[in-house]
Length: 311
Image (cartoon, rainbow, N blue to C red; front, side, top):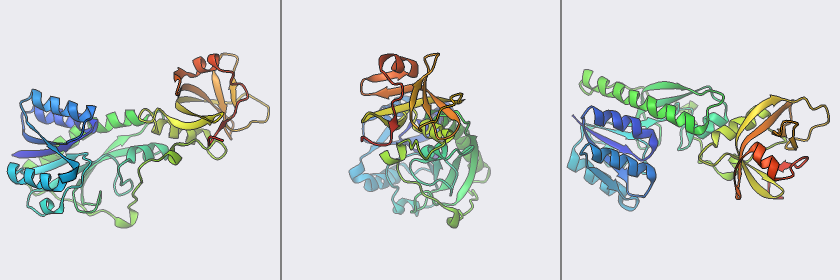
């Protein structure tokens, strides 16, 4: 059995390691663009004597078709890939399976991890589905749940997904062998499908007046580490908050959401619109990355107000 493997991010590392360690016959396809993650995947494959095919964006459809005709894989798994798979290869008898690192059809799109954490979901998933022309809409083979803890960051959840993805791939291959290629799948409930957009700046800004403390923390976790945290503004300068601790407020005075206070222990606190303070643990500006305590020592922050814009 020859397995075609498409990948381009660390989500595919454990799955690829599992295939290589078991000396399975694979053909690895990567995008032809520089990145630390694709370089690592290529180096990992090379260490096992497996050659890699790089696909250029400009000729992706043609190059994927050429690869398919040359390699003739028995099945193909896509462990994240930035280019669309052409319909002309999907029409063949060889099945193509996509690994979508979120529940389907609830979280379609390219950035599901951010939206799940921001939305305070308690469970994510690795969903294996057949690839069709419509993105993330193919029939589902199975989904392996992955818990999302309240303190999980974007990076933490990706690691959990990557590890689960390896066991999911092993499960898929076992099904393939046991059923002689006849793997059942279930159509998605289209009415329940929701496609989330790519994350933009507006999605990353903390809305101090409208968001509760737990909503702000969820946004911060969803943006850590890839954006260095959620975005707010201090005297017109962008400030990213990467980690916070929720603490019940003991302050009796009227509270302004986003107002900063340095407490008696030197902790930097931000007021919210409920009875909870956010202790700023890690922040970053153009000048550097600081603990909240270090930031408070270097700047006069008492009574300063964090805002939602440069104004």
